[in-house]
Image 1 (cartoon, rainbow, N blue to C red):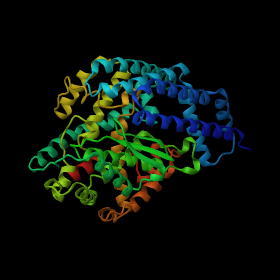
Image 2 (tube, rainbow, N blue to C red; image 1 turned 90 degrees about the vertical axis):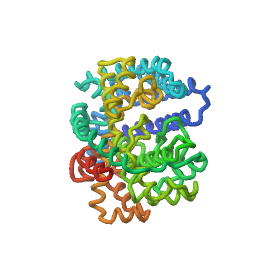
Image 3 (cartoon, rainbow, N blue to C red; image 1 turned 45 degrees about the horizontal axis):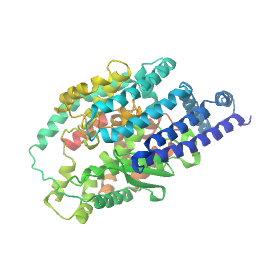
Image 4 (cartoon, rainbow, N blue to C red; image 1 turned 180 degrees about the vertical axis):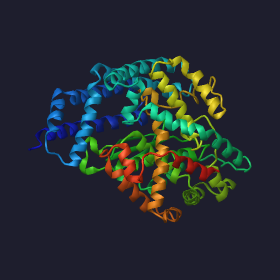
Length: 494
């Protein structure tokens, strides 16, 4: 039997992929280069593009081709691609065109205003736009939940992390909550006995940028297919052939921007190594947001904060900024591994980081399920920050509930990916160590080739061919096991 229906689908998804490419680059420009006056027009243009993609994807012929293609003789790659096509179609078909357009416009408006409202600590102004975003997200969640037979929040979670549920998250995060506070307190108490010297700035932005570019090069970033820029919130965007990463600089703080770059380079290497033979098809896309975050946290935390990597980094710091007491090797490593609960998630150490994520997960789930309203967020945020990290955010919206970009465009269901990603990263690094007995020595010598080859073979090259659970089982020999994360933190910090 020929593959006529399947081939119609591949042409349709190739077309969708090209529109997604344009949308990704227009969004990148909006976050990095666009003058403020262009915001409304760009928001409308992106909304138009989103509606066009939605129309193409939900065309009734696509549904007919999907049904007919099931009867065609497809190899295992094509069957996996058909499975992913079906998922994309079913996700889109649940939403009316008017909702897609309204969400795109509301998200663009909220994100653009957030850029000035956050520095101004203007919760009152921000909450007006956020209420509209939440209203539309609830509408979407209701439609998805009715079709899926799930809670509203689980229906949104499924967009980012297929087959994950809040019941499973509660189990995983509940386990973390049972041991993390004690580990955090013990790590802080242990480090309190050390006297650490803080790096003394200023650290010129231009030199920080050079250092970031050098780190990207060492970590294998392909500059023929990507670039580094500045934005209000670090991100990785673009497309596999043209990956755009960003960071933000503070001339009084040396390492935040650098490790932001290392984090985003992990995302970028994954994108740059997705299977080009299947380009333009759903199967060629990254598996899930938690797998994506596992790659960035693998680079930033598992590798980047390791003693061996920091020893390689230290001479480059001295070369660019000169020697000072803070850059003595022992102090430099200890400074980069210090556990210090703080307000800002993207700057958090890896021990306190899960607290930031679980806090956001619990708030956004309550928000989408209708248990709380936007007005309740600041007080709840403060309460949870006090309980987890002993910090008050009362009146400090800028460093509290306004600090992240994710909710501005309705990205509810994304935050759990960060701690799931940290768990996957620890499990993957353990498996890589088993497979590569001389890995630590290679890292100490600045040779990451075997490690990156292992990631390419086990994660990167598969795209969305396998489910998340199958991908992890293939790579590590077992399902997600949060104990590797605990072992990693205990070994490094206690």
